Structures are given as C-alpha cells and as structure tokens.
Image 1 (tube, one colour):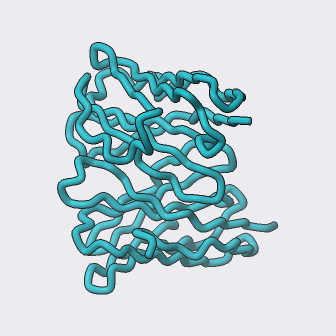
Image 2 (image 1 turned 180 degrees about the horizontal axis):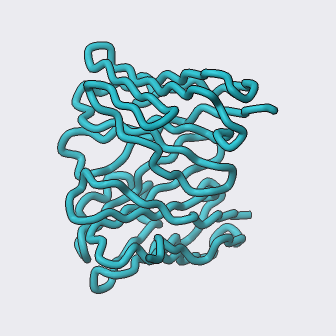
Length: 114
Length: 111
C-alpha cells in the first residue's frame, strides 16, 4: 500500500513568489494534517482536514497560507507571497477515521525562500 | 515554557548500551502520548504509544507518569540502527488529533 506522498520534495523560491505544496494521503484516510518544522524548532501543527472540511486551522501562521482539500482526497498548501521565515520542512500526515489513530507522515517538502 | 520539553542530546553510546530519554509536558489536559523516531532528513515515524501502565516493545520500554507530567523511553541493548532523533509527542484531549512535538533527542550509537 502506498504511503503518504508529497510534492515537490524540494522547492527554492524568492521572497514574494508563490509556492504550492501537494499532499496525497493514504487512500481511505479521512484525516489529513499539515505540520511544519522551521530550522532549530520543533515540528508544529498547521491545520487538520476531515475529508474536505477544515476541522482546525489554528496553527496557520497568517493569511498568506491557504490550504485546500478538493473532494476529500489530496490537499494543497499555498504560500502567497512567500517570506523568508516560511522556510522549513512541511510535513503532511494522514490517519484513519478516529483521530487517535496513528498518523502516517509523508517525506516532507523542504521549502527555501531566498 | 515549551509544551513538550526534551534534552536535545546528543547521546553518544556504544553498541549494547542501555539509554534512557526523558520528556516533560506542560499541559495537564494532554491525553495521548507517543514516541516517534526520525532519521536524518526523513519523516517522523511512530515508534510506540505510551500508556499509563507502561508498555514494552522488544528492546523499547515507555513509561508515563501523569502526576509528574513526565514520559520516558528506555532502549536496551542499543544497535547501530537505533541512531536517530527520538521525538516526544503528546495529543491533548479534544484537540482532534493535533500532535504537539518536542524538539527531539538525538541518539548516536557507536560500534
């Protein structure tokens, strides 16, 4: 069974540009989470989808970040315009129906904003 | 005060050694507790959940002390392949599964 996949694996952009990250969860997983690790800091929660609905977006840093989950399948996270402090590794995770189930993480997207 | 605190290490131990990691959490509403393992430039992977009664999985033993808000992980007979960063993770009651991570403790097992 395929795990969580993320695209791209790396992205290098200039400040002010737009970047869109994609996450494909494990098939059948209703819960989809985005997390971020900024250099030197711990991994932090960004937001949580249940199917296509945003369940909790309390971790989103500001309105430059927009997440969507079309049809409850894959999810995108767009950063527009990107700032230097947005650099980090963005992880996506998915889990089965119950929120206490194990979360399976994707390999992450390493974003560098110059 | 950070929500989940860990000693960052590194812990450098010889093969076969026993090593223990500790973690404290600040929110008494924390409900679920986990140890994740993260290899360099890889994603976190669940190592084991931590239960109030303590639990063991092979060479790994996890303990939880709710009164002290303290979690531990013991690794016996360390292997070279145990070298990684170990993340202490909690999930608060009613948080809908949003995980709160510590910064991790780095372990390096030497031959």
